[in-house]
Length: 523
Image (cartoon, rainbow, N blue to C red):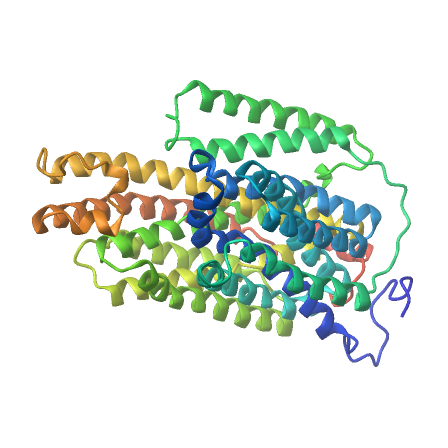
């Protein structure tokens, strides 16, 4: 099949679905997604050894931040470039950049070089996830694609669970450089499969790249990432640095909107927001990222500080939550593929999430690990119900020429929500913790121990039993407003999800006909 086949209209009668190569294509795509997700997790256990080898303790956090910023900045760009130049070529370029960055990170001789190469790696990673979503959106009809979106949950959970252990094993057995080198054979396999088997229709367009829009959006994303990373942690919310970043965000976004209105090929076409399905999907994705990604770190904190679980044991306790995410995502994807209807899954996700958040808010120092695990399982089920549905819904009403921009915007919205959630939850938690410790722990009982180090198991063991109990109670009480806030945010998501139109998923992988578009606008 050449690149000009599979053009337009519903599939002819008698066809029996995707060609046999589909399994190889999807294996290559999901391998690329797994790499991007894994790399964000695998560094956690390798970082101490990296710092010990290369130095740079004062900037080691940037090893992760540089990767996140680079991938966030380039996600919307890759979506648009795929629309303009073809998704296969852009996807292969992204894999190539990621592999070059991985090899360079493994070779790095100084912390400065590692930071620079992590940026390169992040630039490649930004194109992996959105390219796969766009490929599915073009290769399959929305209804047929539903069966494949469920597999993303497996890649996500697998990376989250396997990342830290793999990083630890590779670092101990072969050295920290193999945390990066391991990407090369796996990435090469993904590249080979995509290059050999992926065939997509070519739609010639005269590309006019929106450089100004990209630069303004990049400035806003970088400023937002720094603000959400630093506010309430490194700098006070009212500090000059944080206020300055806020001003940069507002100005950059305002100018970006003005530029996009006039651009021939905008990075994010503003006309997409006229479609309520797209707009609701983007905003609910922010909510989902805010709560379901932003709260995970605080669950681990509760397990380790309040229940006394080790880092390894906390990972084991979080396993049911990940399994719940995978199960609900896979089952909902299969049902959507069978019925073609997706409307109530985001709403169910928000509703179940509210229940789980309120249950998590009731946890205290006496809550058993079994009960906490049950609450987290419920949260995982809620997270899985919206994991790919929102992208599916947005793609269903989008013209094929905008599939990349649509996929990128929904993905970016979730990333944006995660950054905001981590920052807001951290500010709520640490502000409350200061007050709780002052009220519960007798003056001088901590012996000068910094509050920030109380999450360290070794530090806690040195405290007397009554003081340690008071610290555990303070941590539990400080987490309560975090989950109450999560429930409130999910309530907003629920209200918006109910407004999502019930437009059956299309059964052909082309633009919706005029009568369907008109029906979608007035449904």
